[in-house]
Amino acid sequence: MWLMTLLILLPMAGAMAAWLIPSNTARPWVLPLTASLHLGLVVAVCIVSPPPSPGGWIGLDAIGKLFLLELSVLFTACAFYAVNYLRYRQERKNRVLCMGMLVCLAAMSLSAVAHHLGLLWLAIETTTLCMAPQVYFNHNARSIEATWKYMLICSVGIALALLGIFFLAYSSLVAGLEPSLLLEQLRTYAPKLPTVWLNAAFCFMLVGYGAKMGLAPMHTWKPDAYGEAPGLVGALLAGGLANCGFLGLIRIYQICMASGDVQFYRAMLVGLGLFSIAVAAVFLVRQTDFKRMLAYSSVEHMGLFTLALGLGGKALYGAMLHLVGNGLAKGVLFLAAGNIHRAFASKNREVARGTFRRAPWSGALFLFGLFAMTGSPPFITFSSEYSFFSAAFSEGRPLVGTLLAVSLTVAFLGMSLTVLPVVFGDPPKNRERTRYGDTPLLVVPPLVLLLIVGVAGIWLPGPLYRLMNAAAALLEVVR
Image (cartoon, rainbow, N blue to C red; front, side):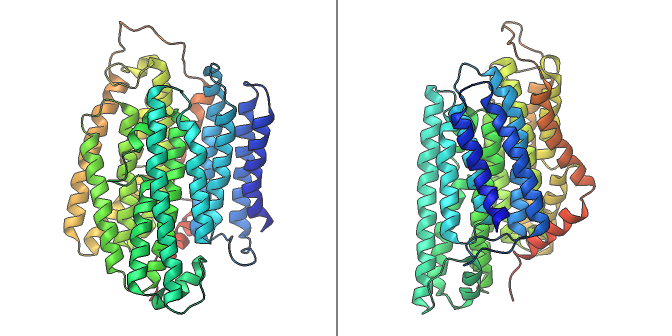
């Protein structure tokens, strides 16, 4: 229990230290120090598997372990990257950014270990609030507009999710059961809960947490927020906060699957997942802003997560693979995109061209990040996306598999039309060079993430393989 408590208290202590340190140069070093200690704690709790807290509000199952590992590895890479990034941004005070990132790490850790739906909701809402100032870091008109869109849509979404939790609690009262919001108890109650209230709870939580994930049509905050936030903030939004929304969806999914009547829920998930993938594919075509391109890519992959839950079977293991692959690959792309943005002082592919000549390491990372993100071998995302196709056809849904194939092909072509000119084009001759250049702390963190995604696609360590299987088993229908 005390190890799980430290997962939350350690980042909060780091946030306090970041607030108290007066030096704008020394303060960012709190991030990698805290992140490294947090990653060590995550590994420890995954090995030790501490028992749940008295009352069952805090616990760590296989799903929570997998989320914690992905979040902590991504945050550690972003933390080391932040040191050199903030050195380039000395014109901005970084106290709020450093503190907010660490508070967000504490909230994301709490969401992974929360087995009480009210506590989980509180943790996810905290991530929304503490990341808003990070989106506004550049302090211009476009960033404040992006911040308001982010706050408005995500707050409405999280409010709808709260209504869904209320419906779920009320359903136990209607059934004559002791009211509870504990995950394990609700899974036991599920077959006895009134269908109409359970369905209402699922719909509200799907829309609510779907807004947090950025599922279409609740995705409209993503292009602005991802486009205007610093690259490291975009990486945390795409690979961290969106995954927390997915975790909220997973928890209500576990309860609904335990009810026995699963067709309604799976149909909703498949429909919304396919719709998100298709919408993202359309907007990825002819996208000129490469950071907004990454936002639509995130919409696509959140759709893949949702589709996987709806398909069930082999796709559930694929969803756990994709959780790791998508989160870390997003880190590669966003950090590399941040480097390219500073190298050319532009996010437009017509201006930011020829990265191989101006920032070769960042250009290579951006190119290979594209392959990792679009499910190309040997990256782990190839295995996860293959499992989605396999599940669609083996479950007798050839139309779903065909629509998925067409949408992913369009998305790949759309991303390629943006990424390839940025990497291989000729640098503009009529623009003054910026002072940016590739440095180890800006290149090594995304490179490490890329290597993890690549190696895991070829060889998955035994403990991680077993953890993913255990996590997928928790999502299977209880018969």
